[in-house]
Amino acid sequence: MTAKPMLVLGLMSGTSADGIDVALARISGAPPQLNPKLLGHTSFSFPLELRKEILRVADQQPISAGALSRLNFRLGEIFAEAALAACRRFRISPKRVSLLGSHGQTIFHQGQPSPYFGRPTACTLQIGEGSSIAARTGITTVSDFRPADMALGGQGAPLVPYVDYLLYRHPKLGRISLNLGGIANITVIPADAKPSQVFAFDTGPANMLIDALVQHFTRGHQRFDKDARLAQSGRSIRALLNELMKDPYLKLTPPKSTGREYYGRSYIEKIIRLGRSHRAKPADLIRAATIFTALSVVDALHRFVLRRTKIHQLIVSGGGARNPLIVAQLSAALRGSSSRPIGVLPSSSFGIPEVAKEAFAFALLAYETAHQRPANLPSATGARGPAILGKISYAPPR
Image 1 (cartoon, rainbow, N blue to C red):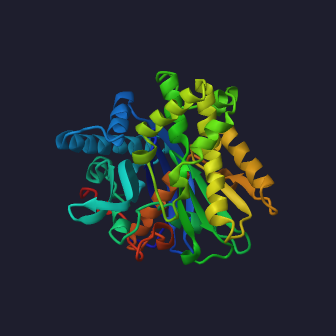
Image 2: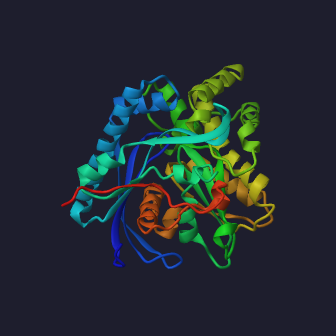
Image 3: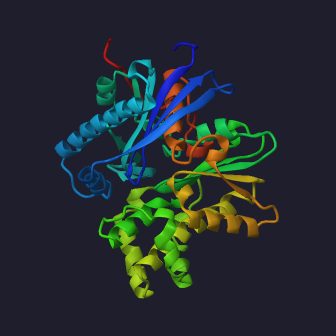
């Protein structure tokens, strides 16, 4: 690879399958003097029927091998279309872009091994064919980032902590990067941390439960709770919230990761049944899921982080960072439950818009892969050692 700065696109589609976030970055150097700069970001929605199929498959509904293969290739085409459309919005020729990193669409993730044909096996599956993206865009593409970490005994998630460390490490301040996507995950970066001192894990659900309840009760007319209007119109039912906080996942010791396999359709059905037993109205349940998101993060901090690490700032990104009720709950809990109040800040305070953070991260991860450098943090994923992430699909010769 050239030592000159590279233009790199990052593509991200999260667990909620809302659509595709695209970030354009200029990157040069190498850790610890890596120099990334976000140049632009945008997003595109999935076609409605395709999103329904993604969610259906991710909820472990039956699909044939042929249909899954078609979905993989079709998503590759759609990711490519998003990348090309983003280039037009950024007013940059795809020929100037050196590299593309695509997270793909997660349809299954099981970080903890379970018995399979006589041997404990962990697995993950992100689809959106990288070869299709490379062929359609003419840009060499890195995709399928998680398996390399899992092959070394890691959970394959979270992967963004490597980027969090590069962006947020501070000589005097302990920081936590919180991403509120479909799932909530944290990266803990002690003051003046070495990479081996960074740890990270999924704390539990975030937008996934809220969005699913909103879509259920509005019969698909609303996809999310804009400005938490529905949640803030509901009443708090303490007994219902207490039931949610008994979730066994919250007590599991890190490293740990989760997804739609656990917090998907069956979990939503359980919440709706709980709501009936507590005579909760739709807005009450949406409020409960919203507060549950914030309190499960706070629970994770007190249970696994604050007893061992001094933290000064919580840096929030992801779509949930725009939910005022979640942010207010986090701020109140962290201000009032510690002798050292923790400041809650949006990632935009550090120059990275909340909704661009993960797409930006996968641009950086692709850059590291192209330079044959490992970009997992074994302390975060539980892997036995460093891994060079992803699979490279080269663009056709020009």
